[in-house]
Image (cartoon, rainbow, N blue to C red; front, side, top):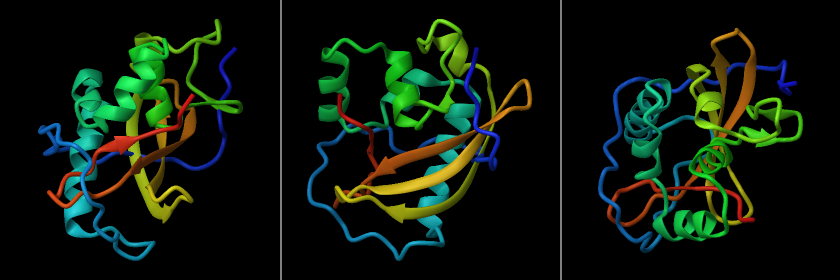
Length: 162
């Protein structure tokens, strides 16, 4: 049985991602005030949306903080679970996991549409972006990504640890 959130809808904007370089996180640049997205953030979100809606999971992995990604993958989680964790789609009551309780690529491939809603700030200095994903069967799940703009202008994604 899949657990779904019956709340809002989060969609990613189509367009591809311009964060192809894998740079060290570097110094943090202060984020814009919570609420509205800057044009630069809209462009990045459009690229992320396209990757997610096209199911380009390897491309999405390239957009993550390399230290965080390496730490999580070395801990034994699968690429599919890592992507689900990055998107906030592997929590009790809001999980894309299949009937076996595990996230597989075929589960991620159920994502049809992404919608970004708003941004906020998390306690660890990462900015969170909230939205929803709509699945092919019409169900919606909450979506949350976390990023930190670096001095070189990139937005590497990060996620929970453990």
